[in-house]
Amino acid sequence: MSIPPSSLSRRDMLKALGIATGIHVSGALAQEKKDVASSAGPPAPVDPGSLRAVLLGFVTDHEQADQARWVKKRDDVDGKQQCASCALFKATNTNVGICAIFNDRQVPTTGWCNAWTGR
Image (tube, rainbow, N blue to C red; front, side):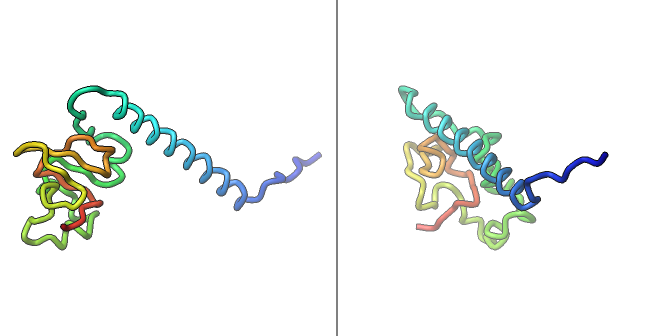
């Protein structure tokens, strides 16, 4: 007696895995956005260990960015790519501001992520 082959092809299984992963990630991002919206007072700082921060290579000090991984930062020979010079950054005081990519959470002016966009 042999075991019948699975009715799902490898391609179908990979599609299902991709859909499940997308649902999980979108749920985590929705929860992150909900957490930000429900907080009163100044926005919380970005957690460098959060999913979005890790996926974008966020660091609080632009000099600590992994240049081997992030070509955009490797090409920044003058060190001008910092949160303070990003089009997505809105300064709130001299050391921090809020970032649209991170649901208006606080980031330091000296930070960096791969979403950096010049003004």
